[in-house]
Image (cartoon, rainbow, N blue to C red; front, side):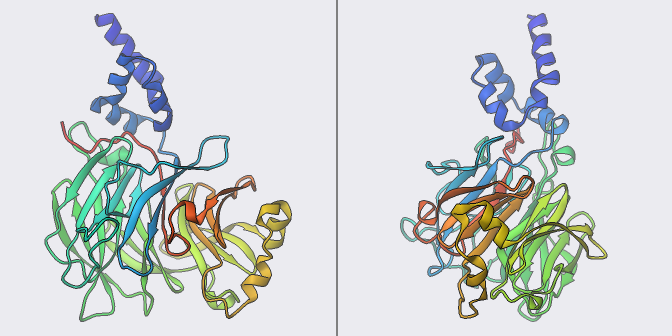
Length: 394
């Protein structure tokens, strides 16, 4: 028996910890012993600490109504298999409860808001006196933690999540932080409330930031190495460094006024441990990486003209250059939805495509109606990495 335990430990240390979480799902089917081993919290901690950093597993899509505030639908999942085109899974993720609106994700954990349902598929609109419940969960393990919030969320404009498996995960605790961007009534600036799962309490940071007249997008957020970034509707990106408790706004690589596209279509993402700014304009698809956070130094890492994209991919031939010249076009005909590790989710008209900036590959994912009847505009799209990181304490 002792020899068997030693073999299992050797397999765990030398083999299983080297695999990604999505591969370990299949390994659970090998035997009952392997299933129990992989499901054990101590293995999950060991895998998170000593395994590879979580890789992109796919993108979470959630329909968001533009007519009824905070009405959301079930979550769809677009997987990004290795060596295969991304594909939409028809069955929504049942581990995300109904009426949960996804706010952000980080290293396998997701942060959501839930609202009291009025009826099936409807929610109470968020007003000054309406409160909501915040949840942090692991979709893979189906574990959820409720974050208690005592005050109203009427002036909260966005949320973010930070979690580092290498430093925030131990044998007895899983530490994460939730950042809430708060707009005070007597100021145009933003303040920040930070929740720590270690202390199970909220704390108001001394930091405040005023990005000008720009508003923060509540669905375009990314966390990179402990810093949370929120895209705004202008030439600024709002950021908050959780550990240093520093906040300010960094300018986008190029002011939107230099482009003819109206409105500006952009998103933020992560690749190689850096913030990425992705824009589609008359110049084509442009991707910048933030080289220096404090100096606001960007480097252009990828560019592709729209003409070349349409030439190489016949299914993409929609004469985008001419469409983008149409100043009377007020809706976003082209919309970069989310970006992670070189994979861009891109909506063109009523179809969602995936584009790989590392090999130039492009694939049709689905028609927008396959995500939901109101998914043409303003849907929530979040990159996701499968992880074994446990939330519930033993």
